[in-house]
Image (cartoon, rainbow, N blue to C red; front, top):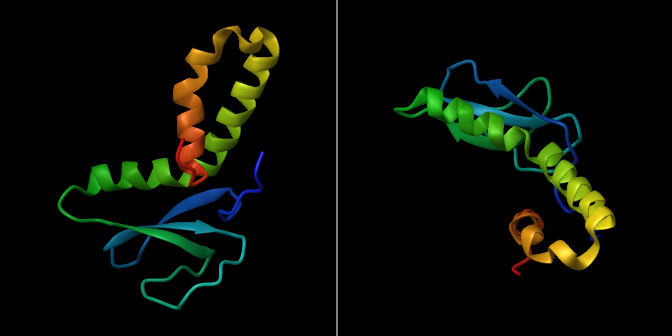
Length: 108
């Protein structure tokens, strides 16, 4: 398994004080250019603007914030199932392996 290049989780969401966007933040230090809005409780990973669909954008922010745990869980599940079922279920793992590759920045 390749070493992760992304900022380690957990990631959290935080609403900006002006409600212009949701921040995805990490407690792990991230080297980035100082831009506004910023977080006083963590390091900003990403911004999800609160445009005309604030509820949808909040859900998007939650999904993005869950990404590190989702990736780890999917990797573990695929590895465990491969131990149980061996190579007989290779086709069933294709979608999960494609999602892992996408998250790792690989094209398969």
